[in-house]
Amino acid sequence: MNPDGRQPERTRLAWRRTVLTFTVVVLLLARPVFAGRVSGAQALALALVALIWVATLLLTHARIRHMAADRPSPLTAATVYPMLVLVLLLTGAGLWIGLPA
Image (tube, one colour):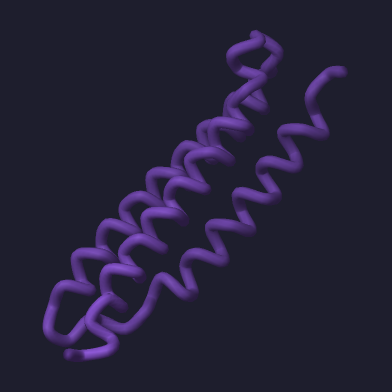
């Protein structure tokens, strides 16, 4: 039996956990919207956050789909994910700093 037989399954689960974590962060950032305390600039920032979330979903889905191939494509997600996290961090910080107390 191949000792690495479960590695693809573990990797797929790790990608799904990453998307779940992104989803929780996006929902936490969107919390002020439900309280009605968002300005126009903050609404624009939240739209950017939503786009980042969609990009994360698409990237994860593509990576999981490519893992099923005999020869998976190079790991481009390793360069894209850190950029998405950085933009999410900066946008989220800007959102929370600009909220009224």
